[in-house]
Image 1: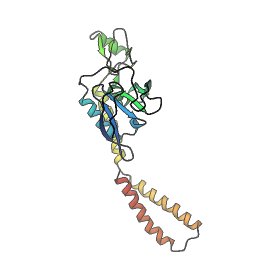
Image 2: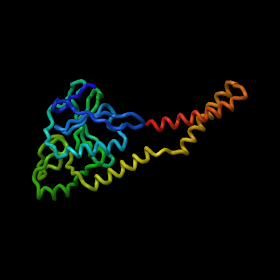
Image 3: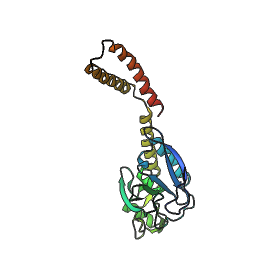
Image 4: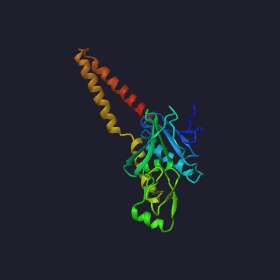
Length: 239
């Protein structure tokens, strides 16, 4: 597997494997020096809830590492074209930013912005920023690492990221959401499985009747019901 060059520093990123929704795995490229993640197209939404928790743990282990400021311009590791800055709104975390490839090869996002997207980081409101500015004049942007003078700016002037903190309450709520989603995803619904098997066999029987198959087709139906059930269970287990 070919190494992926970091869009910021151009050094090789490390590869990490996480469980993919439905089946298989997602291989993400991470640069701990720049604290950035490269997602190939749609990878960010293909990770299981359990995979998101594992990724959060990995990012948190490195959140105090020395950080290199993001380079300019950021470059797509696939086609080498300049990445376009984008903004989006997360359901639980608020506004986050990223840089995407115009050729749809993927997107580059910092650790902090990913945690905003997944709801682990909370954005400060105006009153909280004003209160903080009385004690701390300049902070480091969690999005790009640039200095932000919060006495006069309520967002990063470099990457336009909002002022955010890794709030214990937000982390606890996000972990609870993902853990609940993971339990629900991995719990097999036996009743739904039975309904699916019956519906499948009814459709197969209807098609056989249309083809005027012999009377002993019901015997085949019984055998197929067992075979189909085993097939459904096997498909669930191997995920």
